[in-house]
Amino acid sequence: MVLKKISNESSSSPFLARLLFGLLNMRDQLYLMGIQDKQEKQKLFDRKFKPMYEAAQATRDAAIEVEQLIRTHLDAIHSGRAVQFKANQYSIQETIDISLGQAVGKLINQSIIATKSCLQDILKDPLGVDIGFLFQEDRKFDDGLAAMRKAKEDHLAIYLSEVRTKWSSELNELRRLHEHDGWSLDEIKYKRTSTTQVEVILPTINGLPIDKFVCRSANRVLLFIENMMAYAMQQSCKYPIFIVEIPKEQRDSKNPQRFRLAARGLDNTSPWVLSYSDDLDFV
Image (cartoon, rainbow, N blue to C red; front, side):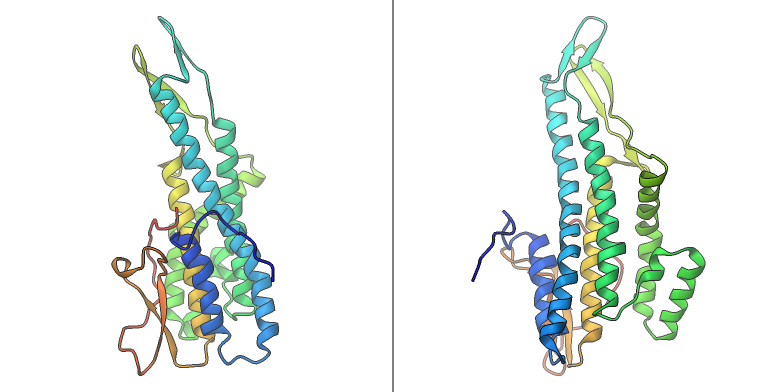
């Protein structure tokens, strides 16, 4: 047996507890329960899960990097360490524009890899849920929604419609602009507010300061992965087992899993129903 360290974080991290341990527990206790060719199905699942998880982790890492770069730079500016003042001018001694632009580019690219490439792939095979139309033009998207509603998958249709409207189209367009039209993040601006103080004006994306944009975007991507994987594994289970969402205030701080499994007829708790929401748990 070979044990490998995969992270400096513990199970108290919502990212590890939910997107790694939580989803792998559902793999074992929900998706693989009673399935034929169990070993082969698990190998296929794991082979496709790994790149999705790695892209999700890279998305989160990029958001954390952006926040750390900004926090360190603000401290350097506000403390005066990175500013040199003269009578009628001032100079910024340290800049983060290049590093910040690279981290934002990484977040945009890894978000699309995690969702459009990796998540879409594992959902379709082996889990049997095709969301390819989410990333296509409006006409094909509308056709895909109509087919879902015809198949009585109304909750999924409503959820994907909200995801597309609220952020996925915006993120895909941003990646297109970044890759094909040469879009790049604006530089940080500075404004002298007193003889010894400078205000830092962060660049924005779609009207949000960059730190808020990356935090919101990363959390949305990671929650989307968790929701879709949970939904697909629930749909694939042939046994009377269902998913229950644990209220935030009842989650174990040492292992803050969002979901638990319950048996129909033995647990009167209401099943989890896929619906759109935002939270800031992961970043």
